[in-house]
Length: 309
Image (cartoon, rainbow, N blue to C red; front, side, top):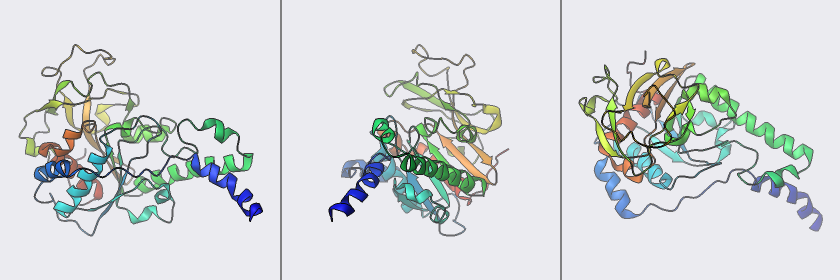
C-alpha cells in the first residue's frame, strides 16, 4: 500500500498544479429573480437541432466576482428560450478530442490567463520541481487542448467570448487573432458611467436591432484592446460612445477613440461572437444586453443567419 501511494503522489502533485475545476457558490434567489425578469421570452430563431453550449470560466489570473451571476444568466437564457442547453463546467477534459465534439459552441465567460496552463497561478515552483517526463506531459496536454479548441472552431463550430475572454491566452497568438485583440487595460472601471452605442450603419443588424439605434447607459468596466485589434476585420456591432461617456479617466492609450465592445466574425468555417460587457453583476440582468448575448450565441451556434461581412 505504501509503495502504491508513493507512485501516485507525483501524479496528485501534478494535478494540483493545474487550473482548478472550481465549484461556484450558488447564486442567491434575488439575483436569479432579477435575471429571470430580464430574460427574453423566446429565441430569435428556432434551433435547427438540440444545441449544447459549454460555459467555461477557468482563470489563471484575475477572477471576476460576477462569474456565478454570468453562469446563472447564460444557463437561464438557454433554458428560458429553448435556444440551447448550457453545460457550466471548468473541466479541462471537455477539450479532449473525444469530448469536445459534443458541443455546438464554447463560451469563455470571464476567463483569464493561460486557461490550459500545465500549472495554476502561483504554482510554478512546484511545477519546476516535477520530474522532466511529468512536466513534458503536462505541457503537451496544454498544447493539445488549445489545438483541439482551434480545430473545433475552424471546423465549423462556434465560440463566444464574454468580457475578459480577451484577457486570455496571451501565449497563443492564433487565439488573439481569432478574438481580434487582447486586453490593454480598462480606463473605465466598474463604477464609471459609460454609454454604449450601436455601430453607425448597423442599426438594423438583427443582433442589435432591438436597441432601435439608441445607446445603452450604465456603469461598467470597458476595455481598450491592443494588437491584433482591428475593427475593420470584424462586423462591429457596439462601441463605447466617447461623446456620452466619461473621458477624463486615467489610462487611455488608444488615440483613435476606437473602443469596440461587441462584434462577430467568421474563423475558418466557424463563427466567433465577442462582447466585452460582463464585469458587473447587473449586466447579466440587463434585458438589452441579454438580447445581444442571445443573438450572438444563436448565430455562433449556427441557428441564426445574420450579416457577417
